[in-house]
Length: 90
Image (cartoon, rainbow, N blue to C red; front, side, top):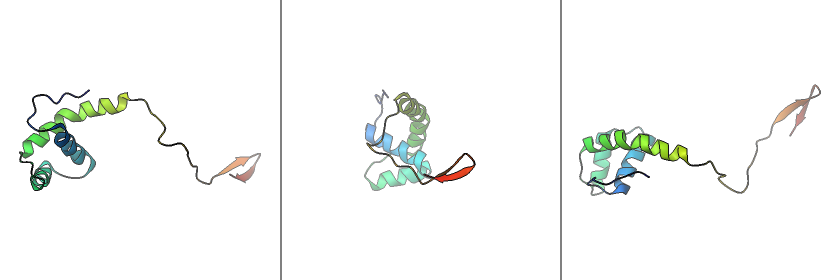
């Protein structure tokens, strides 16, 4: 479990900034402006520190979980295989 104690901002704000930083080509200054539009006042250096601190912890947390099925059904694209020298459609 990731520990957010001692941080001035809520866990949801921190995770949102880290997610946006990692998922999209945004700078920490862009994220600061985006958060300011949402009423969260903070410095761009805070976002940079959050990314440096929480990215390794999030990666460990995501990789630790067991892989599970996404849904009840699955689909396979059409494919051809070669059986006894002849191509078969599946």
